Image (cartoon, rainbow, N blue to C red; front, top):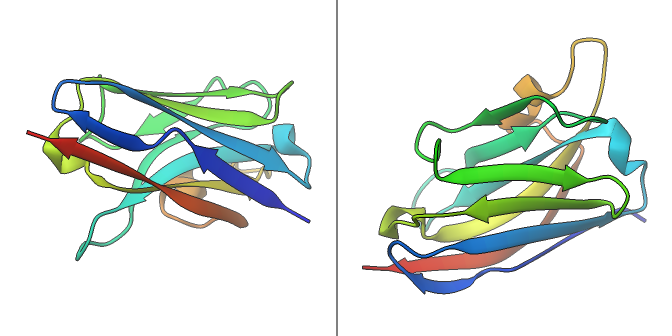
Length: 129
């Protein structure tokens, strides 16, 4: 049974930091691109960051988080991370992790658009001004 279990959400003031984690199980973690998404009330889901399978050398970030957020993965621990620095009130949203299997054309470009095989539960991030 596939599980993606996020943690690390919370409430912080603007300028603060949070680190989200997503523990994966039930599939071959290293063979999947992994990503973080968010959805604020009344808004569409947005791809925040994705990281390539295996080595994790290739990443894609939404313009709104470039320079502030860093995605990383630990294949030994089957865990995905999102370090969020200099948080802004507009970062307030429910954050989700997701996975997409790798393929001949890679998987990052598909995953950042929301085309995932697996989705985790959400973890709430609230940033106050």
